[in-house]
Image (cartoon, rainbow, N blue to C red; front, side):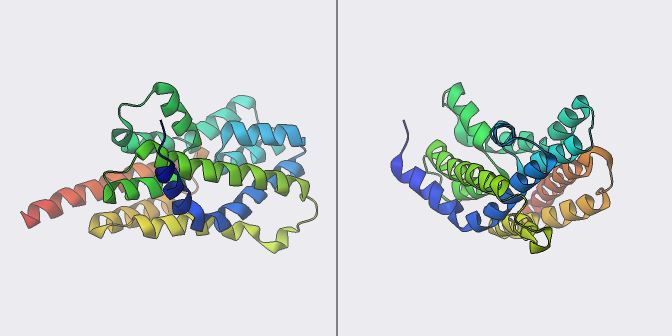
Length: 230
């Protein structure tokens, strides 16, 4: 069912990003401990949600005693970008079982999505399901292990250590790897401007708007540039 070599290539592709994922996961674990969650509940949330930004937002809302519906809605809004990712990567995963699609959808992250889509464009012969599984499962394991470590070390690691530097580093790393030509640059600049402008919008809706508008700007520019070349 799976191609061993493709899985290994997927693992290797995300290996450089692990150093950025580790502090991100530890921050999630530390926050869970400081919020008052038990280790079991923290691990259950980490496995169930498996999305760093959503986990941190949920923990903040829990500490603020927010209503359960508000917590669920916030997590869903933040993770709407995954729907966009799924639409983008779906053509590469045609013909596989629904159960396997569900597994790949659950384990996919920003990093594994970005790395995989770029790799698939440059390597059309790749066993896509195996590559994505290798990339995503590697990050899943690293995330869960370091979430537990962060939880256990919760009160030991001072906030002044600044572990949150790893969060933007992981996204910067995949950002530069995925830029292809002017359409990519335009998409990045547009989404960046929208994200900053919408930073104070409720429920983190600015993040979703930035993704949608950035993709639209990149797609439109690609159409116009291709017409110009024609």
